Structure formats: structure tokens, C-alpha cells
Image (cartoon, rainbow, N blue to C red; front, side, top):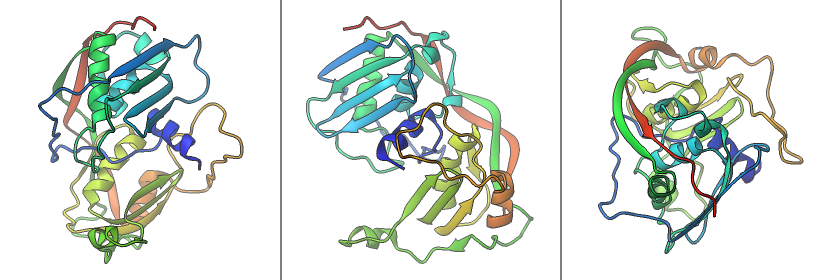
Length: 281
């Protein structure tokens, strides 16, 4: 898969990245962050997948994006966490070029929004006249639990022997983290909380870890992806999908010995009180 396609699918919510959980606190700098320059141009029509690139030098290049793409980037949301707003927030598309005064320091997963995200919040407030507020609502969620009470992990789920901190110090480190492709997840040296967070984009709901399994884990999970991209793919790019693969619910149970249990729970949502179409420049 090309880097261009990967970023497009992340923007479209088709591949779930690492997300902040209720147990993690968002750390936002006290000093405001904004783009030094920003250009917004409306697109006559949507063509293909949205593309969002973070580039060196604190630059943001967003093509064919709707306002909701910017909102999910700025506030680190899944699409189901965004409530309200007029229809054009999802339909109208824009091309945006913006640049910070300097480069954007890297923020580790779970460490809160980076400067690009914070500057995008300022851009939304300034150019889109966004007024937004955070609420907690009782919504449908999935609880990741043991498939059998007191049961053991499934055949694919193994306690990790990989020290990711030590690997990071090596010149040629072994893979650590979560890598997701269509119908396949490789997971190494991470807690199951990270897996639960990452599944939200696949399933369209918050997923909370209630397995009681501590420590770090390794597994590879194969399943039939719930959603596939729409529109043309870049030349030479194919999506390997096994039509005989199990659903993600069956795969989690059979391969990991876990279960995605549908229930209710508190979910942070962001409510759009008002937003306006930006003046083009």
C-alpha cells in the first residue's frame, strides 16, 4: 500500500489509528497555536478519496477534504463522536494549504494533539467560524471481554517478549506497535487497551478494554474488513481481501479468545453549535 493511499484511508476513517481513551488525558499547550499562512479553496466537486498530508516544515496539505475531516483531525475524533452541523459539513469539499511558523514537534501516540492539530482548531474557529463544545453522552459501545468468563487467551494471542523501549534505541529496531491493513492486524509489544482504542474506526463505536489482561501482547488477526474504500485506487494498488475470511467479531473470538460485547457506556462527543462556509482565497 502506498503512503498516499494510507493517509487517504486514515482521513476517511477506513483504517483506525491509535486514539485517546477515556483513561488518557489530552495535554493541550496553554499558548495558542495557529498557522502562519493558510489558503482555503472550495472544490467544484468531490473526486476520489480525501488526502491529508503532514509535511516537513510544519506544513499541512489537505485535498478534497470536507469540514468534518478537519474536525476529526483537529480534535482527534472518530466520525461518530461529531454531532450536529449543517449538511455541507459532510458534503462540500476544499483544498487547503497551511504552514506553521516553524516545524511541528513529534507527539507520541496517546500524547495528545500535535501543533498541526491545534493550529487546525484555530483555522476552523477563524475561517469557518466554528463554535463547538464537548459533552459526554450514553451511547452504544463495545466492551472487549474474555470470550469465556475466566477463560484463557485464544491461540493467536501471546504475552509479548518484545521490549519496545529497548528496540527503539537500536539502529535497526524490530517492529513494535500496531499495523493495520485491510483484513489484517499485526500487533506487537502493546497493551490490549491500544488494540481496543484502534478498533473504534473499524467498528464505528468506542471500544473499551474489560478483559482484565495486563501487560503487553502479540498477535496477528485476519478478518473480512467491515468497510472498503470507495472510488478509484492509485495505479498499481490493490486491496488483498479474502472473501472467505471470518467477520471481525468471529475472528476476535476464535483467534484471540476475546469477545466484542455490545453494551452502553459514556462517550465523549463534540457538538457543533455553529459553523460557516469559509470565504475562499
